[in-house]
Image (cartoon, rainbow over all chains, first blue to last red; front, top):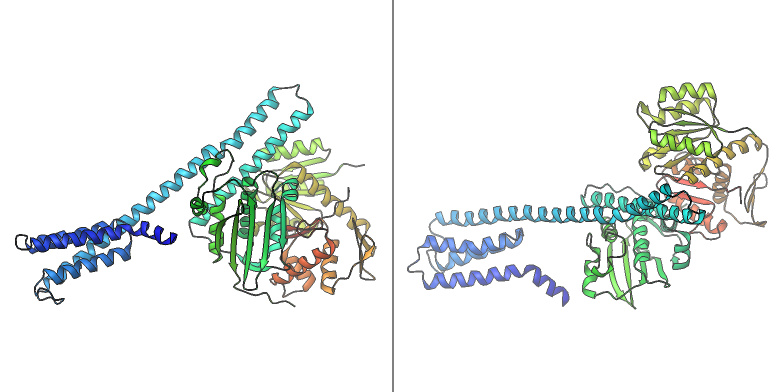
Length: 343
Length: 233
């Protein structure tokens, strides 16, 4: 039901254009005596243009066809039939199509341009805010150390720790930005090989401090989950899932992570308790640069889960976020395209 | 005790300076070269104990240098690389490098790698005739083909044993997938990754306390594995 509503919103312009076509037809029919056929024809192109500016080729084609049918049936001699006597009208129909097509292409270009602008803006936001935060930590700490000769060892150590942590954050962010531009450009070559998920999880855990990972994480991994995929990208997937869970989980709660081998696919589940999430917002969680408005204080760019989605899609899998028991469950299913032959 | 002599081959001046400061601080002797040409001359005249090579030298590929030096010496070579380009790293390791580290690197990690590689060099010289290899709580006997973990005998399959033996004979060295497959399974098996993945997985379950947080068999993502042997502990 909900899906239908969203679909409706997405395609409501088609319904509006249809209504418009009906009204236009009605008016033209009433005034068909005083309006010349050429004007009637021109009016009928309006709904086509209205649909075409949305940049959907199929919708434009559909509208063009409908307009032509109405025009042909009601106004073009012989009236009330679908046959055409003067072949000049065939040309008119053809021009309908061309006009619609040109506008659709232009609209498509414009759409992708606005999308690119959005991405550029978000990138700027990341660079200006999310990279600046750790950078200012580094900058500040180093200045303090350099200008202060009588700092005791302990506070010095703390400052070094801060610098270390901040630089780690920057490194991960930069990898993510590079990956996301690489993944979204679509020109990525998957380096497929046999991967062991237990191995991948181990590598991913190295990215996090031991205290963080050992106390908070509850891991369950099925025996020998060999999977034919891109090892580097799958590692990045697990790192981002952990990173996200660590960042947004409530203090003193556990994170549950599970890999289940279901023979024809691998299921990955990660659950963490979190503050209340609006169910409507869950849908946007995988959008690039999306972040819940109320979580501004947690450093991160919302880029992580978008990358997860890209990686899952590249492996023809599915990813979804489910609100569950005062927390959020992210579930991934990756189909096995190949089975390992063993000795 | 004599100080070790480390030969730095690096054309990035700030990285070179960082390395030199580090080595001075930790009491290593060092010599540095900024180009491939100079590196070979310096190497021949000083006979260093360990080599640190930047892969992207301005006057040529560091890999060629590694190959040239490998032909005349067995000394440990650690590769330094700015890009985390797995193909390049694997190529350098296959050309004869023992280990690699990516920039930006932590000084502690670099020192740990240097010490581990220097140690292996000594082990190779002193331990050629022994039949027992001990790494922390693991003990492997080449003559009886027995493996003990905390003095308890392990049941390993023949392949698991061969794999562990290869690892234990090459501790603290980054081994590429290809190298391991070729040495343990034999020529023609270089690309049979599923065997390697499977047997590393089962071997870990037998020797590691926690197979997702391994202490012995460490994964070098996209490159291979390294068997970590921490002598201090």
